[in-house]
Length: 165
Image (cartoon, rainbow, N blue to C red; front, top):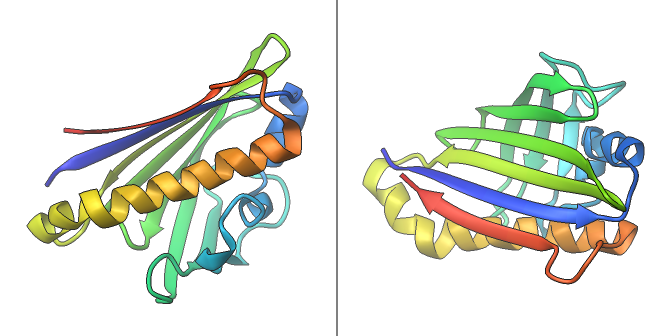
């Protein structure tokens, strides 16, 4: 089964403390997710994030079809990174690393998502025209929302790239 990787970076004009507070709070995912996705947290988003935390969402990624998504926060290093992994949802594998690094004038935020699609060859066939463009749209939306809230440090401060292996 083919493995894919999405890597995005963004330089934001925000302090490390403020960035960590916003990005590590699951409730803020709704703010940076397109409205049409119908993103709702069902459970698990109360209090400070912790390793082992299970968060349940409902999302509507394609054609109005509601999908349950369950993630676990598997690793946290305060004000440095955290990892969420899908336990139940639309992917065969979803491993999302969120890194935050202090740089001059703000932070560098890096997302690395390693994922596999279900349905074998069918999943691979729909990746280029359904999954990849949808992920590009969602992560581009997130970047634009964060830019609107906090401001970017420079032009072309956001990157998004896909790889497969």
